[in-house]
Image 1 (tube, rainbow, N blue to C red):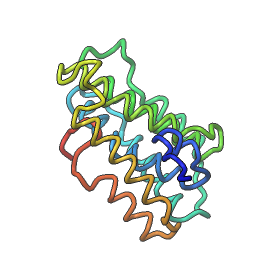
Image 2 (cartoon, helix red, strand yellow):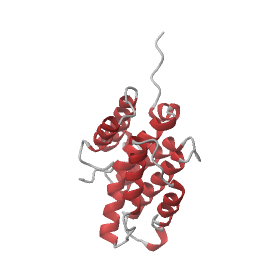
Image 3 (cartoon, one colour):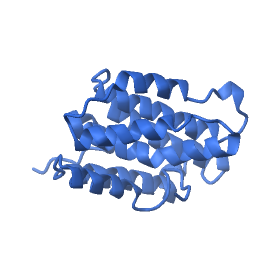
Image 4 (cartoon, one colour):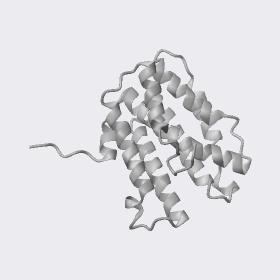
Length: 192
């Protein structure tokens, strides 16, 4: 008898070590443009903290022996997480999701939260759902079948499938990162 295919979150839950981190980094790569657009439109300045932190995670994936103090970067990302009370634009929500996802990614690297990849996966899908509901593009009933949500789930599945054969070599990691950005849009459809 064939085993039924696990849903996305169940597959993510089974990821371990660097593959969970690579998957989380790929999703953060798709969420970070939302954060960067929020910074540009609101004048919020993280001084490149989030981009630098994500770049360091990719560096760590390519070069496992690299010495990076992720504890310091986690603090910086937490400081660079916008406060909902200080901003009245919708953009603050996907920006917060991206910053929290990045924090979860660093906690995964630090082995502080073994389920960090699941947190990131749910945040990314939740960001899409919130965006669709707020813009009125979908109702509670139609969110799951909206093309943007279908694309989000398909992209996460493609990233999971690619992990099965991914080697921890610099070129392979670079290709994996490129796959996350292949469509040229963020998880909520912003053009990169």
